[in-house]
Length: 183
Image (cartoon, rainbow, N blue to C red):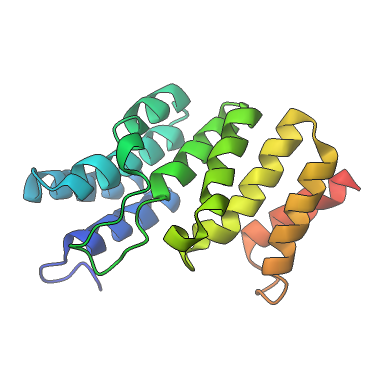
């Protein structure tokens, strides 16, 4: 529905990102190409939105090294906030995808640094889902590092934030199973 008519660049981006997270990479790629064509000189599009989308799509294909390479373009801008967007919380999505990429590559220390960056900048993230999901990513990164006590604490933080969530949400179920394995 949001893509009917002439959607804004931000709507296109978040639709593409949702599609990428849903495994619909071809549709996400088509929207990314549309963004690139329609906004060739837009800094937010070229150095945040597109690198994030391209990295997520590469990660979905199992190519962590390409994902990291794509995200390099976003690094100088990832803490910046656009004054031309009604959404001022787009900055940290490249950081989140980078953290996920490091998890997929079994690089726990690097993943932990990315998720911690999100937690350290809550004023940028505001109430975006990646704020809560950063706790889960951090927990998983600590597991990779063999830091069980830190992992347990990060899982507890995530589960505490989601204590009133629908118990059938897949990510919540996964987190509970992972946490139970630590105890």
